[in-house]
Length: 147
Image (cartoon, rainbow, N blue to C red; front, side):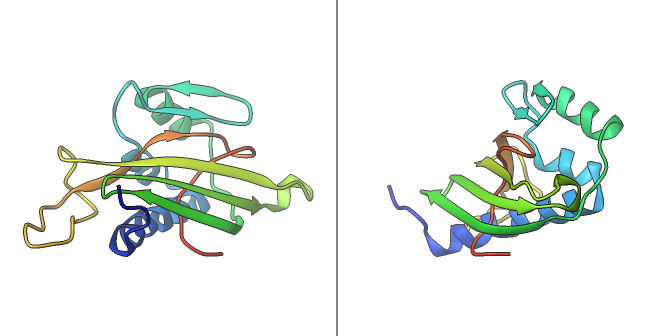
């Protein structure tokens, strides 16, 4: 298995940046789009454990608004072409000096044809979505470098 193929890191980073922009703007529709619509998708938050895309979507639509964060120490690790994990630390004014941590697991699925393309001659559009996500002030996301 090849780790951190540069083109895959670029793909995941683009999806990660889109996700973070949606977090900062409180864009629930984009956040919902980026999570795989499946019962296996989960989100562990600072005050909630959400199992399945429907529960996550409902949470985002009714109990959440955006909050601008400063991200740092962000690391994306890709495994082959279809799997990645990303982690970052973040600060936000309402955390009163505490450091938030987030981590996401990303996977590429052939049934999703929206955002990313597999590089190479076949160039079939394939979307990358978060398939597993941990909390807001404890774990979460996907990026390359430091924000």
